[in-house]
Length: 291
Image (tube, rainbow, N blue to C red; front, side):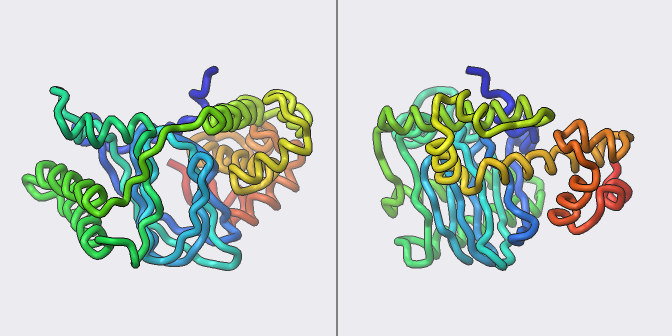
């Protein structure tokens, strides 16, 4: 199965330093980021607000102060609680930064199991063992990257090693063997999202998407909502709007062209949905964000 379209295309850092940080703000009206996956590991600190993360088949209800670790290749999405402002600080990096070219104890005992989905992480909360040390360590990582001192790359790696040592030292790792049902469900989710990502410009019917993954319409709708965190129709709309925002920023195509190209066959409806999400019209967004 080709799942390349599910992969986030954004480059996190570069080949010199495959590491970067992000600050994100969300409200219930600006919606979530759509389900996606990437090769990098992701560590998110909740600055303000509350909401829910979906990571593969697991759901995490988070609030201010929580820390969430999303393993490489995991499908994930996030949406804030109704009427709640939410802000997140995130680091994203390639776990290969910490893996030795020569297989050693660290690789075998800690990092390979993460990559193989054998070691997973629960939500780290204020009452978790070792929380204060981990929070301070995470803040040091952000500060180190922001400072860009002469030797920050070397210090950054040492801080990342220390952060993971705290996780294992405080027994915050769930060691498990992935059950066949779990693997099958993840595979089915990827089939569904891949179908949407390949056909978003066309009319998408629930019955056709359900058929693509061999589910009845009724079970498909329950399955999608449970694992993605929104209805399939909501997901399709969010995905199309995100694509349209990229086209508005990077091309000279007209609003009408972009509307039809992203699957909106009614320009007025497209304008309405776009303004609901981004708080500006497509035309205003294009003027403000043109590269």
